[in-house]
Structures are given as structure tokens and as C-alpha cells.
Image 1: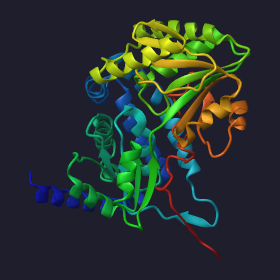
Image 2: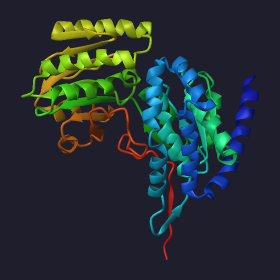
Image 3: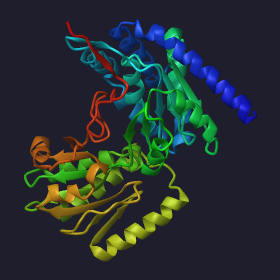
Image 4: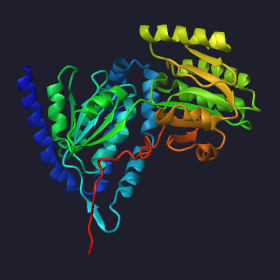
Amino acid sequence: MSVETAERALREALDRVEAAGEALRSRDRASIANTVAEAWERIANPELSCGRAARDRIPRSSGLSLPMVAWALSVTFEDVRAELVSLAARLDPPEGTRDAPARLGALVLAGNVFTACVAPLSAGLLAKVPLIVKASTKDDVMPRLFADALRRVDPDLADACLVVGIPGGTSNLEATLFARADVVSAYGTDETLRSIRGRLSASTSLVMHGHGLGLGYVARDAELESAAEAFALDVAAYDQRGCMSPHAIGVEKGADANCFARHLAASLSTLQATLPRGVLPPEVGAAQVQWRGVAEARGVLIEGSCCAVSYEGDVAPRLTPGWRNVMVFETDRFPERATAYGLHLKTIGVAGEPDRVARALPAPLSPRVCPAGRMQRPRLGALADGLPPWHGFRRLMSVED
């Protein structure tokens, strides 16, 4: 297909999606929530064709093992209908206002965690914004499965959500997409977001969700073995490739950080039997060897089955290559250690009292703070970068008497 033909096809697709916005804006928000929930439930159900396709295609596209994919689908959608209905109610316009949704929204997705598209896709439609979804060329399976499931459930609503793939090097196609959108919500590397920002007009809103990471914290009065089991799941989920994945876990002084590290390594090795790690890419293998070498030189390295835990004492946490390599450090200055990551810090998991940790964090940090074991299981309405998932999509008009 020539560039001219591709541009014409994209413009025609944008026209169709924008035209579907009129019907979307007239719909009851609760009905949208139930329809979107039904589409996701089809993907979650292994007995339906959408669910079978998910379990067949996502392991190949994501590099995750089938048990890991099945786990992620199960926990992501276990309460999806109730969560979406609740989210819809929260979006009802307050008194003195009315909905004024964007004419057309563009959602730019990353490809590192396949379920990361669930919240923004759902929230955009609940905000009554027709969406053009630019899927990652690395892994576009989940958004395409959603579009297909939505088409089976409700063709009219499906007309307002189109998934497109725009390969690298086709800047004209991206320019066509961005020129038509009132709002662009983008997930990706900081470099990708800078590039997008430089190509938008002054009248197009940009909501950016850039590179992120997670940290863990173990309070001195926490039960170490239970904390290790919970954090092992946070590390293993999605093979530690997401922006909520913990790279380091701080243990409050007064607790035995070395003991916690050993419990964590044992729990990670145990999880390998039920949630096996995907095949390690060669480039990650090289980074892993380097990271483990530094860890061994600085402290204690505990290697297990497809995992490694380092214990490095009272030092600043450092990044890992992911893929189930995690650092443990001891500290009585956790808020100060967390500050070093700035706005890249997306999630803090806590074995202890999450609220106590959240109150101690200085501005402008705004991570999601949650119990250990739930770092990779945010609710659909959870804040990301301090913003609700509908940020930028939801627009209100003030109506004064």
C-alpha cells in the first residue's frame, strides 16, 4: 500500500469514528459501562472464542508464559463489571455542569504490559469520547481483541473505537492522526512522549504517561515471610516489565533485611512452578549478568530458579533489568530514597500501613500506594501519575443561571 493510499484510508477511518461520536454522546453512561464490561468478560472467559484467542495469541506477542497470561486476565477482570459501573457513576456531571466530551480522542499505547490498555480504553469510552487507538507494533493483540469483542457485543459502540497500527517511519500517518484529535493520551518512553508533544498543535491536549517504576517497603513490624510472598507476586507479575513493577524493596531498620531477601528469593523460586517466567531475551540476559555481578560485589546475591535477589545494605536503591531481578536494601529514610526517582515513581507497595508511608512522601511525588501483593493489580479507576484514567477525555461545560 502506498503512503498516499494509507493516508486516505486513515482519514476515512477517522471520519467514521468521529461520526460515531454523536451516537456515543447520546448514550446512557451505565449502558456503556455494561457493554464495555461484557466485551472484557468475553476476553477473560477461556470458554469463548475471544478468551481462547487471548490465551493463544498473547503469550506469543508478549513473551509471557501462558500461566502468567491466564493469571493476568483473571485478576484484571475479576470485578470488571462492578468497577466499570462504579466508574460510570463517578463520571456523572456535577451540578451546574454538563458533559462536553472531546470530538475525537487518540490513545497511544505502549507494549510492555498487555493489560495496561484496559483502564484508558474503558475510561475514554465512558467519557463518551470516540477513540482512535494507536496500538504498539510490538504487541497490539489486547486492544484488537477488545475491538473485536465490542463488535460482537454492540456494533454501534464498536464504531466509536478503532484500533490502528502505524509502523515506525510513517510520520505522515501519525501527523494525520494527531491533527484530527482533540486530545492525545499517550503511554510510552519519555523520548516517545517528547516526540509526540513536539508534533501537536496548540489546540490539542496531551496527557503523558512516561517511563515508570515501582518500589517496595517493609515496615519493621511486618511478618517477613508473608511480606516476601506478597512482594514475590509483585515482582513476578508480567515478568517485572511494567511501570508498577518493584525494582527495589526497602526494609525498615529494626527488621532483618537479609532474612527478608532470602524469603523473597525462596518465594520467587516457588512461583516459577505456577507462574513461570517467559523466555529471557538475549539483550536482557547480558544486562542481567552485569546487574548480578555488581550485586555480588556490593553485597549478597541470592540466585534462584529464573530469579535473583540482592541484599546490598543501607545504600540507595538501583534499577534492575527486570525479569525477576530485584534489590533489597535497608533504610530508615525511605521517603528520601523514594524521592530520588521523582515523578517516574508510579507505585509503592507496602508491607505495613500504606497510609503511613503515603503521608511521609514529600511533594511532588504522587505514586499509587497500595498493600504488598497488589502493585500490579490496580483498580480500573486508580490514579496514574496522580491523574484519573479519564483525564483529558472528560470535559465539562459550566452552565450558570
